[in-house]
Amino acid sequence: MEARSIDEALTDCAVYDHGERRGGVVPLTEAMGRAHRAKDGFVWIGLHDPEPAAVEALGVQFGLHPLLVEDAIQAHQRPKLEAHEGLIALVMKTAEYVDETERVVIGELMIVVGPKFVVTIRHGSPVPLKGLREDLENDRTRMERGPGAVFHAIVDRVVDEYADVLDGLFNDVDEVEAMVFSDERNNPTERIYRLKREVIAFKKAVGPLVHPITRLVEDEELPVPDRARPYLRDVLDHLVRDAEAVNSIDDVLSGVLDANLAQISLRQSEDARKISAWAAIAVVPTMIFGLYGMNFEHMPELKWGIGYPLVLVVTLGICVVLYSRLRRAGWL
Image (cartoon, rainbow, N blue to C red; front, side, top):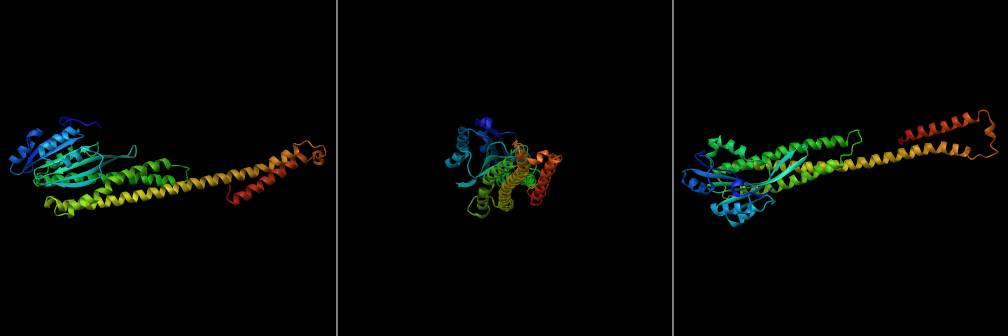
């Protein structure tokens, strides 16, 4: 998606005090001032596909470390956790499963959390946070916990979406398994390969995130609000479960692909045996009729009254015997 200016990229900018939103959309230049003037307030800013200049301006406004600004500008990063001057920044991969095309659409989300603000910078389309913001604004008790509660809610929402992706993948894996082991002569190799490619992309989003979330839970030196740690531990449990599930899907697909290739090889062998068996049966009438088609002068049986039907009966009998033997042998 094309990068957008700060005004175009800004999805929302709001100040919260005592768990309630104060006013509507706050101008970005006034956001931090209002948050500091609020007794128990913070600002939550959301950006979607901002251009580099917009991120740099935001960094100046909030005093972000240049390394954090650089990470926010450069999309397509691995999930990671950074801590600078009392701030924490988490890069996550968002995921959405499109069942119609059997694709896992991967996006990127960077969350920067400080004592008085939360900044979310999204790249790509999956997992919009507008609905999450509305849910939190209707839960004053939760919002009173400050930026830590927002941080946990965002991470939890992204990880919850992973479970939906896994459900879609499991359904499609079940379908290809049924196709491979059905009696119908299907060849879902291309579908299996495409699913495996999507699983690998999803695996790169889920697996590397386990370490950063583990650090958030276990590293006491990180500036994570204490009230957020127990909730993040629950998120970590779900994330580890998802990482194990996506690994199992990858293993199952590898097994299904091997089984499908074995099925194709077996079918090819069966086809070759059938072709050979029918060719062997066809040799008998070909040889006999070819012999009588040579127009030799001295062939006594040509003058027999029963010669013609006798040859037909003998030819048919030999063919029937060959067919029975080959069928018992499993070639037909």
